[in-house]
Length: 58
Image 1 (cartoon, rainbow, N blue to C red):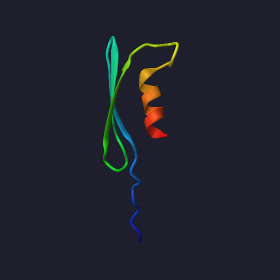
Image 2 (tube, rainbow, N blue to C red):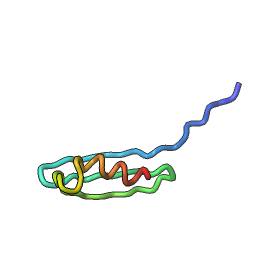
Image 3 (cartoon, one colour):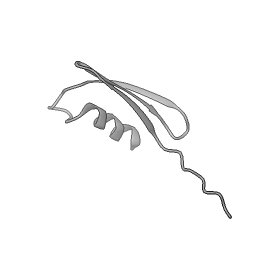
């Protein structure tokens, strides 16, 4: 019987505040990445957390 290996994936932690959203992402290689965005900026992005996750994951 062969053991299945779990593929490393991004992990994210989000702190959404009134003015800013802070996001910490751990890359598959273990490196940490951080970003702070305005919580609301509808002319640029619909959702700050989703914007960062999509940027880190590509």
